[in-house]
Length: 187
Image (cartoon, rainbow, N blue to C red):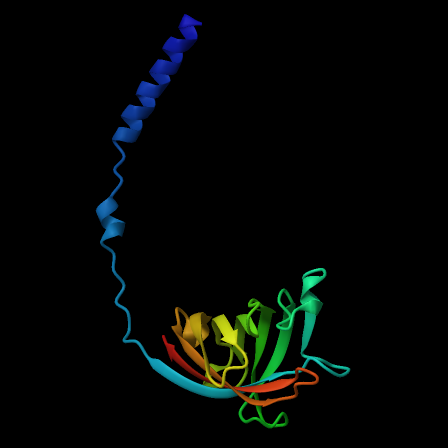
């Protein structure tokens, strides 16, 4: 056993001697800077079409609390998955500019407050292939709501900003809605 300890000690000393001659240049990477371009502020307006009724809904319920959700006036605990069209105008037949893909869930017991987790992916024009990520509470019955833009891809890489939502139309019997979005993106 003593012989094994001596061998291990000699191996460790040899490694320290070898590695000690290698230099690790912290300054080489720590001082590397990339010059960032000036930030751009982009303002976009479009319409979000959330259809939960009919034969081809764009949003479907994927989860709920076992007994509480159906008894709750705010549908607390309900989670919806959506793939909603984004259009230029409130008219559902207007030009498609993107898709809102993500989920929203009823997160408030006091009011209809939807936690929104969405990727708004753009499919037209100079923003084609780019997206923004929306996260925030949407108190849906308020006339104007604000949510955060927490990231993006493509032209909107490293984006931040805010989204203002205003309901343009809602069918209270089905839950179908058209919501206008005005987004300000810093990228």
